[in-house]
Image (tube, rainbow, N blue to C red):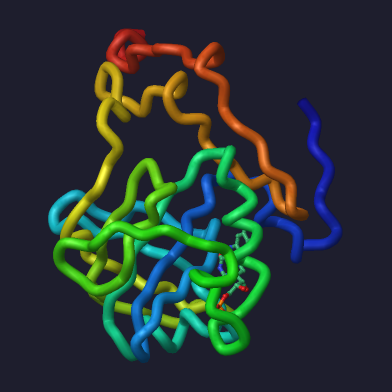
Length: 191
Ligand SMILES: Cc1cc2nc3c(=O)[nH]c(=O)nc-3n(C[C@H](O)[C@H](O)[C@H](O)COP(=O)(O)O)c2cc1C
């Protein structure tokens, strides 16, 4: 398939579709939440993940102050909350009160775990570095919360959880369990 060259490079990231996470942090006696779709797993041992946060977000400084954060993964039916916490700032509004966000206690850090999350990671700040106009925060995962029965045959059971995937421009979609294909990579190494 022939491809054309994108003239506007500032839209390059739209080719990379991911599931947004809600980052939570507890600072100055209250909780905050912001959405982030630019994140990744980084290492098995130690278990590391990373998230890219603009210095314009209040969460940026809250993480630098508290040295910890949690990543919460929500299903499509809770996409409204992803949009809500991604649309306002800690310094202007108590998002937990305003959006009636329910929490569960964390095990090893103070950042709250969202009741609506099907999975959540508690992270201690491992490292951080500025790349361009964002800061890449690396978290060491110190506890993982998952809903019962979340996995089937070693992967997320998409019949049980409808993923929230972010297309950009405030549009969300999901992945269908009917589209799952099993491809044994060892079969391809023989040729
Ligand atoms: C779906 C979605 C994904 C977002 N992804 C990011 C991201 O990866 N990094 C970032 O810095 N901001 C991202 N944002 C913007 C922040 O969530 C938003 O600016 C938020 O209001 C910051 O809140 P705070 O100032 O309380 O930290 C995203 C927003 C939405 C709705």
